[in-house]
Length: 362
Ligand code: NAD
Image 1: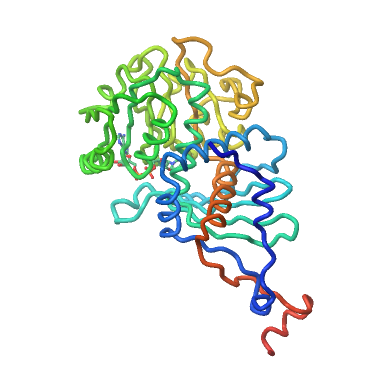
Image 2: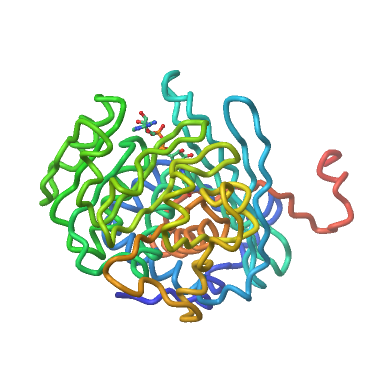
């Protein structure tokens, strides 16, 4: 499996040919079709494994990052967020929304666009679609957490909420765990049919369930990916088997949760970034003392993951900007390697950098 090399990414920041310099600094624009093409070339499995490597590398060098909780603007029906993260070489940010009512209007609940820039000059390198990439990075981060928290022999996965994120979750876990059976439930039967259709070609047994209880019973790993702007308790502690791992994806805003306080209190809880998780995650119902670790502490070996076969573990995923950084740097590397995207002059480049007005009088 190829290792990601940050020096290589920096080498790709190529000076432009002089004939392009008059019109502007060229940056890569990667559209939805460019990402489709990239995944087609690289393959879903291989993209997941490269992303897992990138995430692991970046979580392992946690102290090298300038980090902050995301900036969220809340509305009665949803949220719009800006998510920045940087090291000393690259700066990334993502624009993302969360509008659970959108699907009723034929729109996605979650869409995103991201940008990667070089820190040396502050100039942008790439603007990129990130709706697909958010689904990939959310699944891959969950799998990274599960590699420390779930039992390695986990072969039954339950998915509650079979919307846009759901198949990515299954395929991410499939690369690392010996999945045999996928149990699933959604309030929307159409979403369940779509999920089954998309996963038909894969060699798992697909088990549609009539209730959440039926889906989670005896599951080794449970993914909750529902979209509802309210406090929910999707299932009770007694509904899950001893030793289960829960990957809680859908509770990611103040007042938007999926698990009960009782369940959280009984589980070993891991979050991405405490200042953000305490506001947005399942742990908004508790306090920091309930949290066993941030994910980077497991990756760095500073704290243990699962310690026995009986404990219930929870990864309280809300989505942290470092994950967007990792996927953007990987995609930039792959886009350069495979000549994908369109180079566009979105920043002026001038013979005299103080003569911006000259652009208009020319
Ligand atoms: P989506 O709207 O496409 O799908 C959500 C599904 O949940 C729908 O099919 C809906 O019918 C179902 N649902 C709602 N309430 C339910 C319930 N009580 N029981 C069973 N099913 C229920 O949304 P999506 O893009 O798949 O995202 C799912 C959730 O994950 C959203 O809340 C989103 O904000 C969140 N999300 C989190 C991250 C992260 O990093 N943690 C990243 C992306 C999305």
